[in-house]
Image 1: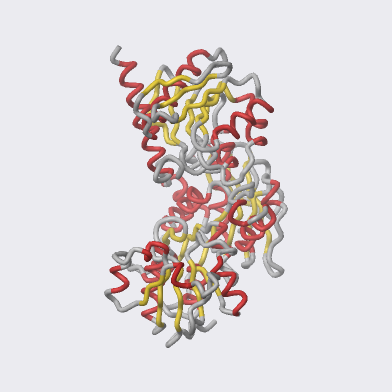
Image 2 (image 1 turned 45 degrees about the vertical axis):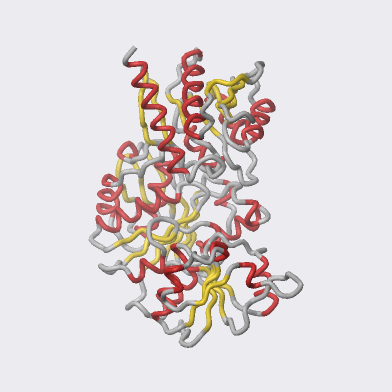
Length: 498
């Protein structure tokens, strides 16, 4: 594959970290980048680009006399940041004008295949509705345990463009990709790719579940295509015509698959016969989703020749990042668990399944994803639910339909700016004049603990697994998790000091 962009005028859509990385690469290969970002409506924005002599555009600058978006004259390629939807007016105009649109991952793939940064790397691609980041971290840990230089990138850490340019050089790119990134990366053919699971998410962006699943399936077009056999959505995906399909399961694996046998992770797909990897109780995070992620990571790395001992060492060494099932406090034997990274119903379901009985704090921006299946599947494990955020009523309605016996509380900021609480069968009432997001979280944790104390079934966790994005209340899932951790620790301290 060649990449000849010298003298090409390229419009980079998005001026943040991804856009900046793309501009650097464009300048390196002799292209002429211009940058569009909505912040450039402010004349003071974009100074770092302007100082380098790069032309800047706000979206309003690209409207014709009739107010219709247009591609600037002379632009031969558009490179988009992942968040740009296909129905963005600029991209619709590009399609009509025959101007190609690439994502930054597509650009990185072409640059790597063309040898712009030395011999092409080994690409291991990880995607799925839930578990991407954990699996990617496990893959990086295994690769490094094997003595091969690995680097996590993509939807985690560095952009793939920056990973190609990073020193010391990474031999193996452990590439976490979102459905957005895969949509804009039509040429990528990884050495091995995995789809962990597929459940309704980002339907507002893709327009349908079918389009979302098709984007995920782009990870399965390389020589080794790995799918989660226990997940209906992943198992239904097709793989590339020249791809070898490999499955992983939490059950006993068939020939050509990976799975769990007598408490051990085993590989029947790579190597000779049956290879024991390590005991499942040595995997972190514990629980079914952590073990599934470990099997996926093992399959990816075994696919590129990494031996079983290195897989075991890498998995033992791996520790989950914050906000992914982290116990942040404990009161009277009840764990307070921060799984703020569970930003869709599928991820929340996995977090609940790792526990016997929980009080769940959930809510935020559901992004069009339904929660009925989550509530119905989890109802026997739910001691109660505290609903927060913009889409809290959708969660309460699902509980009323599928689990009416589960106590439900909603905590929100009222019109007067105070924190309000409403319990099942009661009127809403103000509990705190401070209506901030942190105050809502403090009250949510207090309500969850009240429900846990009243439950006769033996609650083992108060679980923040929101099933939704956080941007209605917080700057991101990290801030939401930090808020939960602070509220939980404060509650634990107040009880200990009584």
